[in-house]
Structures are given as C-alpha cells and as structure tokens.
Image (cartoon, rainbow, N blue to C red):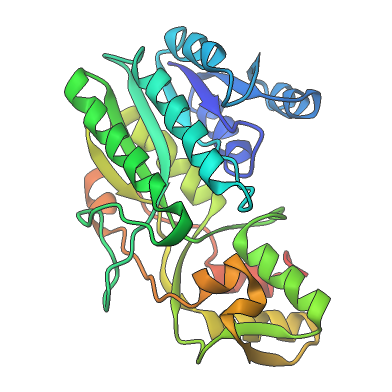
Length: 290
C-alpha cells in the first residue's frame, strides 16, 4: 500500500514510518521544511513538500495514495483556535478524495467522570481544544461517503526515548526551571499513557485492518497518578516533590488537574493489539526525561 502520512517527521511519525516500511508499505511523508524533508528521506520514505495550510498539496498526496494517516497538528497553544480551523480544513480536503481508501486520524482519549473512558464514549474535549471533537466526528461521518476512516485516540502522554516536546517533557522542563517536581492538587489524578512504538504499531494495524468508522484507543497505562510521575521525576532530578496551583503551570496545569484514565480493551479485542513496550513510570526511571 502506498501511504500518505502527515506529520511524518514528528514524534509519532518517526516511529510510524519505519513501522510501515518494515511491513512492506511505501510511504510519502508531508514535510514543511528542509529539516523535516531530511528526516523523512533518511527513514526511506518519499517526500511531498508542504504543510497543513497547503490544501492543494494535501489533496494531491491523498489522491495519489492508497491510504493516508493524519498525525500533524499545530501545537502552539497560544493559537489553538487557528490550529483547529487549519486541521478541520485539512481533514475536509483529504476525505473529499479518499473514497474507497483507508484514512486513519489521530485524536485524543475523552474523559468519563469516575471511570476509565472507553472507545464507546463520545469524543469530548474540555476547554480550548473542544473543536477537535468536531473534527473527530467529521472523520467518522466520512465513512458514510465511502471513506474507510478510523480514529486512533491517543492518551495525554505518548512517551519514549527522544520525547522532547510532549506534556511529560514539558512538566519535567518546568521542574528544572522552578526547582521542584510539581503536581496539582493531591496528585491522585490519573493520566493514560502509551509508548510511542506501541502507538505506531496500532496506527499500522488500523490502516491495514480497522473497519470503517472504528474508534480505537492507543492506551498502554490506563491511569498513572500524577503524583507518582512527580515523585519519579523528582528522584531522577534531585528535586523536592511539591503540589502547586494549576495556574502556575499554565495550560499544562489545567490538564494535570483532570482525572482522565482511559481503557483500550475494545481495541485490543478488535485488532489483537497488545502494548509491549515499557510504561510511563518505567520510562521515567530510565532517565529519558532528565
């Protein structure tokens, strides 16, 4: 299968592209810069130059592929509304030319008060990223137009060696700057997590096997307590562990304050996917984050 991948040079893309190539697929990766193009080429994939605002380029990439995986998203949280509008337009143009083809799109696990969310829960996001739920619904609705679309909903932490910009990396960076390993409230809030290699494997399985309209969860750890994360980070960095007000952590504090575990039981039963890589706390213990 010839697969068009947005975000091919990003964190998950760097794990997914080799996964696809090793499985015998060919890959065309979207690249918005010379640096990104170099990363894609070094992995053995072809390059299509452009970004998510280049709708004609996205149309070409999707039209000339047998399937597509959409990973790219603008993570500048000072311009999140613009990023959501750009993403909505990108998804719209790709679904318009993918009838009869597979389309796998990254999204996020929802919250279910008092329990782990499952694949059967609606995609709902609080706060400024609420618009991403509309995009997720549009992806699934494209199945009614013949697109073999599926969602892979990712947890708050996609971790592993080399993670420099994820939420855990940002939390550790805050700790270095402030001299504390921080958590919010009593720290019993739970975050789901997955290793980046496990996530990449699920994206490939979704591309190859998922039925149209499938909602999948790339979740390894159902819920890791935020205080446990802070305690491991504090031990690794030699910093005191301390509760802080959510406001001190900016947008990250608002996310850390929420209890949001998630399950992948339906996904594992449907596709036979099993997370096999280390969990979040094990990765923190290895010192990847400092």
